[in-house]
Length: 289
Image (cartoon, rainbow, N blue to C red; front, side):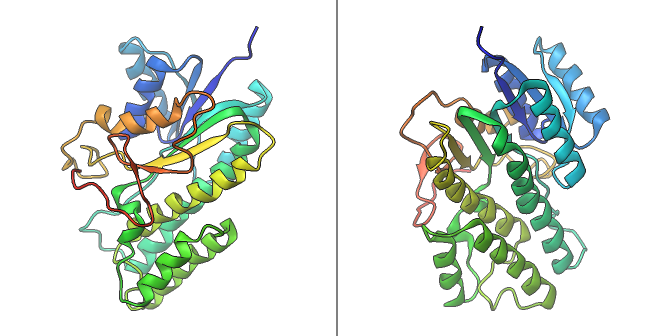
């Protein structure tokens, strides 16, 4: 008898994450774990899925808490020995009307969206089984062209991010450099964009490329990671301004999570919400949502 297949979704209790849960519960042949920072909200989401005739398991996971990440990784290892699918969806965003200083917004957004996602990957990647699939929810904001501060500094930054030899350590240094510049007020003249969310999502998109290179060298066969722009979706994060439903926003991340064995592409790619592979370095990005 084949081992039980396991899928994990971070931030699965609402918004696009909940949409992804619905897709995976319906299509994935195995157990789907809904993880959420708040246990009450997570378990309530499990009940909502039950009403739709869908079955999922819950485990608490806060991507901004090292102990929570370690506890979840330990649980998966002890309970199943490994798992098959990871959807990195959990993230945060400040509203346009936020009054916190830009430097504070930068520190928190980069810590959660980039370093939190990275910490989850560090803890869980060793537990991935052969033919594993990782899907990271990025954004249209995560395209490299969004580094649009002062030139020629912005071009120099884009070149660093686009490098095919960029390391995880170097990427972390770039993320930290942005936070420093945001705090001392020099981010724009240093080439950085005027959005902490943009930088965080460019970070996870760049990370995907690095991770796929590592997977290609991994002894476990057919390991694939991609990231995508889920579309402009009607969620709390967009203040319900997006025209797309959470179900529409879940289409591409779920597609990437369920890619069949031994596919040649996409691998380490950036996709649009309609599953179209987009050149992350040179563009262009599609215009619709």
